[in-house]
Image (cartoon, rainbow over all chains, first blue to last red):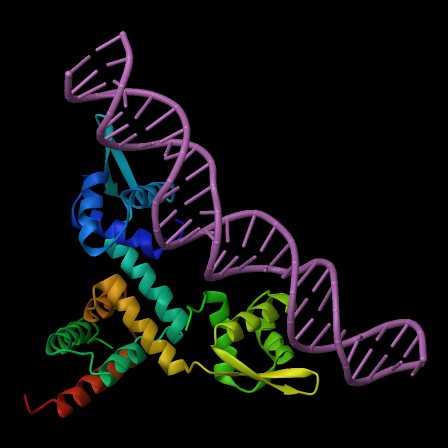
Length: 126
Length: 126
DNA sequence: GTTTATGTATTACAGTTGTAATCGAAAGGG
DNA sequence: CCCTTTCGATTACAACTGTAATACATAAAC
């Protein structure tokens, strides 16, 4: 799968929220958040199809698009390459940076604690 | 500061490890890890200078390069935009993904626990 | 001093990306 | 049936990227 560009990702996110959807529904969904011209959105849809990240089925004259690439898969792959590229593969320094900049909320801490507890549960037989 | 491309980042990393260094030292440092031609590395150095990410001082005929953009600043900025773009700003789901894929090591867990402890220490007056 | 090597600066060139405009076909309105 | 609207398909075009090659200047070697 070719890389998904940042603009393409915004389009893909719409499909992750709801699918299948028509091109015009995507245009509408993006009209709020962005200033993209309808033609721009359709170009991005085409490129996503070309990259194999989404597919479509015909609905009369129009197309209904659906994601092929799933969000969780995308997130995992991007996370790994990002952490590798920027932090040499270590994840804690990223979290540390957020902590230092006061970007961590109560909720983040709670979730992290739960993750750790679960991890330790599963790996207690070390 | 314009965005740093992936290839440019590899060059920048060399300067983060040691600076100031000559173009040839950078070429040598990258000769191991990559297959880049000397000319390629020099182009990347030029582009980094043009982007304001690094600077140089003359040393006779050659230049000695140093980073202007600091690694911690770069990491912080990239992390925030990445987390925003891919995880809508929430950091825990990223860590959760790693946990699920067994990408977390004992050391990561230990570091995370320490971070959390420190965070709670500092925010105990809630 | 003229040639050669070695630095940097400039140029190259195809692929990707952002951002559309134009084209062609078909569906709907009279 | 013809005209206009509305889809998707094709084309546009500049900036950025990856990956160098060529040009130019000057220091080093004879």
